[in-house]
Image (tube, rainbow, N blue to C red):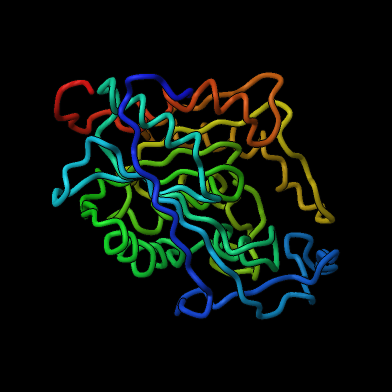
Length: 302
């Protein structure tokens, strides 16, 4: 997790995307200092009256390792809430040690805001394939063009990662599009009821993953590494629906993944808070190694 002398360092390209150019996410925002209220007829629903169309600028940081051979097709990992320079440093060292494949990292900034009524909430908490489709149709072609790389179409060579709502987003991407992604890494995943607007097919948002979706669906070809801290979030808003405890949500996720026979690893971090920086410093290398087990690593060290 620290830059090392003598280790080849990748190149980071900084790209910008404007909301006006997106056909999928033209942009929304919630008025400052406003949130929402629980629906008096259904505490599992949040009523937000202050969300409206709004432009945004999105930053995308793309890490291309020194060992990448131009013109070849590479595996890659897509990360939420970018740029994630800690990821890039870890990849420099792990790739040099041949502990993970030579991969591209695409660290995508969110469209601003947080939770219900915001662009970030819309992108990350919505239970659908839309965000994965946005990445596929609007982000990846830009990356290939601007950074002069070729990205694999093989879902075994594609991973997602994120923390908090970015973590639930990472699983949402692969769950709704397993033909695109098979590997998922999450810190303090928001597997709680935070979707807005409400959807009758998944009325409890990402809480549905462990409540209904995973238990009631055939196992998908996914490999998952996940973490939660013992001091993680609990009911941080006005909803009182018993579906806003991050610790319980992640523990429930581990139980249902085990019951369905998924390849997964669940780390429970003591004395750790939400998306705890120290936890990430201690675990990201081993998490990436676990995530990419079974994928070929070519070439000599360094």
